[in-house]
Image (tube, rainbow, N blue to C red; front, side, top):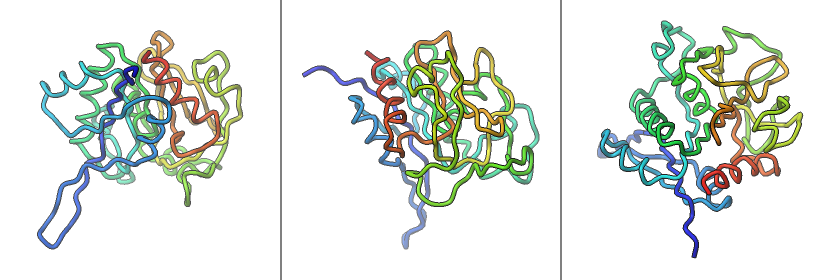
Length: 239
């Protein structure tokens, strides 16, 4: 049996109130693990660990997926004061994923960022975010849909001659949309690979890397072939 690529997947850090008091949980949405497994990878859902633990985990890993989550990145990371419309912050999770991303880049393994994960990729590279799209960049589009993520919300235009275009085709591509923040300024060495019809950046990549790809939507929650192709390409890049 051939070895399956090991994909690090940091979880959401949650707290559930129980009759015995608050209980800390590590929560992972199964569509992420299902799509990694389907593509031929082996997901490793990891707890928060210290720097030595991060070093060891990334040393073992063949790829990193930065998933989305219901929280925002603290604006001080991109040199801004926090606005009232900024959402909940989870510093522990941001710090965990930041440490993983820095190490993954140093090692040179493939990285896929999804929704908030794409935003983190941008911020770590020195880029900036809209803290709240409705108040800072009002649009005719709905970027935070109601209902199932299995259904599309709007389309994105895929930019020609990008790695993403090679994976999903020329577009326009129907996508889901569950975010209230977005890329305002691209980080160092990053280029846009997809945009919404209102101009918001919906995909980014580093063309100097074999696989350093971020998408603002959730391809693991959609069944159409272009979305599945993104995870297959991640696992192919490991090999």
